[in-house]
Image (cartoon, rainbow, N blue to C red; front, top):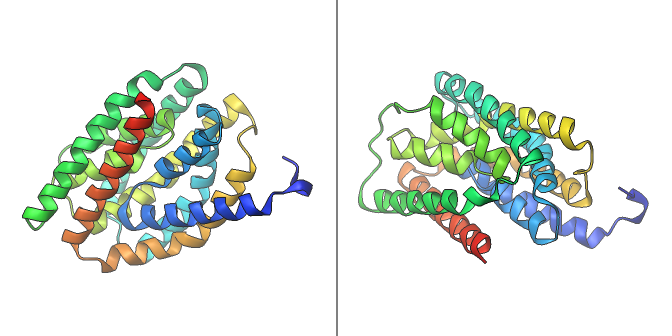
Length: 253
């Protein structure tokens, strides 16, 4: 990358996108990868390079976000361990697959599933206050979320956060725990991409997303702690539905 010929207008745009995406991700436990990856793909970045770039950025933003969530006591550490280890395994597998095989064929089916989950979460948040209970299916979610996050360029939050909420987990601690575990997943994914692709994904967009994401990361955890659970559930459902429908239309077009 030629830093002597930076397009500062484009850099400012990427910083803005990174800031907004991380604010949404930190507060609702999803969407940074989906928003950022969609942007990179729209400007012509190849899928593997786009996913690698996004995860390079997330290695830093999730570290700051995870520390912030921990300081605000938004993390369930037992749930964290159950998610992080299988998530790292799934992430490494997904990064290897995307680097060597075209995994795009399954994307429409995944997005259709996430759209249905988002609609259900909106219904559940609108009609009923969240009834909190300990989730039973955790490790398979971590494995699937890590794999889909790497192979699809985003998906850890939508897959893991939404499914834990469907099972009745506390919205605040679910979002904080998923965000904190995501750091270890993204570092694993980034390391795998690095061995497969080298530094090809380090672009102007990556730099802008990184700056904006790091600036926004501490504030998302504060929002997650202050917003009431029912509103969190509705917001998660709306963001998940909107991003999944957009991605589905794009994948089918």
